[in-house]
Image (cartoon, rainbow, N blue to C red; front, side, top):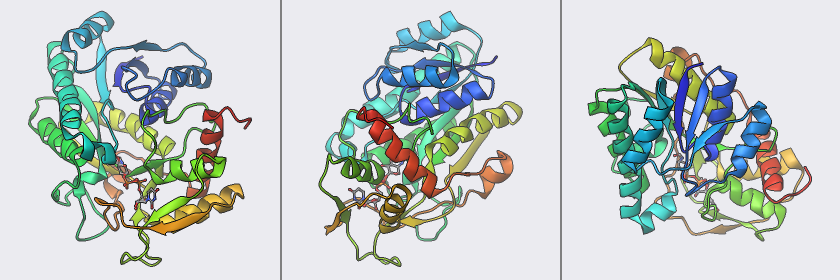
Length: 334
Ligand code: WQD
């Protein structure tokens, strides 16, 4: 079974992708330095796939260590590069940390891939590369706007590095990943306190917070709150195995939006959680959050057509799964 290197494979999206790689008949080789993840995800993945996994506790920026793994494993067919810091808010506080890590790790990985004749890479990018779009939905030809955060800037720079590199690549521009595997056994163990909407809702539901603050309700949207394209993380994970299958047959450079194609507002997400789980969520209206864009959702026709991939799970299912994860993470009986 083709070996696939998965950097950041114990993270939120990485762990879900490892499950899908196994299901698709690939052999994932995980690299993760646990800087923003947990070995608890190894236990969860192995319970789901019912087999032992190979993982190396190394930092992707350490070229010798990464090269040793590639030499030792041999016959690696491709790499999926998740290893990066992902908090928009934190990147504003520590721009250099984000540049060194997110750009440095990709450069080291590409060097090691060249040395070991690995030609295929799937790269984890983000809809934040579009900035505040003028027209919606955004498609892959929508030009980059000025990055709204150092996080987004690192994704723009990494995409340009890949365009110039000699490898075959698929860049996947994620919209807003939410939810978790229906077992509730794997999920986001990020070290920093969540800043994303859905984990803040589930922390409110479990009593870790008193309420959700909606950052502004006077945007130019139907209910005044910001609109995003929220995609179930399992749908997102499955786009990676489809992208791998596609890249093996279609060498060169490819970019795909990975979303649902539907915009959903903050208030709609809160109400969807309440309805799906029959749990009251208190919320208040606060000031707008700097860096927030008003609305964005994806045109995913290219991924639908070329990758034969389409998001299938509903917002309702995502809310049920997100709540399951919050309870599992806090050792609540599910
Ligand atoms: C969503 C909406 C907030 C918290 C994320 C990731 C980024 C990228 C894109 C992949 C916004 C509002 C939030 C709260 C709120 N994904 N909100 N109260 O900012 O779209 O970015 O998706 O790369 O990595 O960070 O997601 O969940 O932070 O915010 O009102 O307590 O919810 O204003 O409109 P965002 P988010």
